[in-house]
Length: 154
Image (cartoon, rainbow, N blue to C red):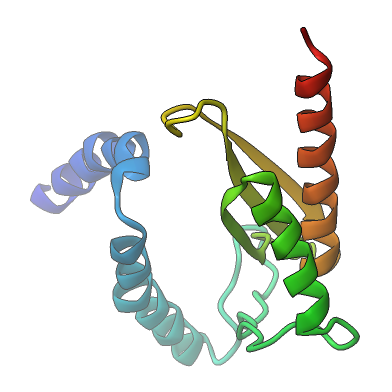
């Protein structure tokens, strides 16, 4: 009976509490929790079942892909350097490009553009693409178009 009560409290109080405040958890802590808790449990279940860990829909989960060290084949660092130089010329800061979550094989590029001289106010831009260069080029187009609209206003 105590086990059931504890499980009930965990499911009714702790889990919703974690869901409500999960955005306050630092990225490093979330990664450490995944590495320390989730992965060992998945491996234990895999060893116990003798198969790949199951997902919520009952199908076997695919192993996580390792991130690639460099740009995809066909994209040179020089291409990305040119795009990044254009971002700097426009005044964009904090340019970041990373694989999108999920199985879409997309990349998400984001940056911030200061709205005032002090940089206190900033606008965030995001764009996706099938590779990092495509995402950054689409983001560059968005930032350039927005800046043109801002300059044309009285």
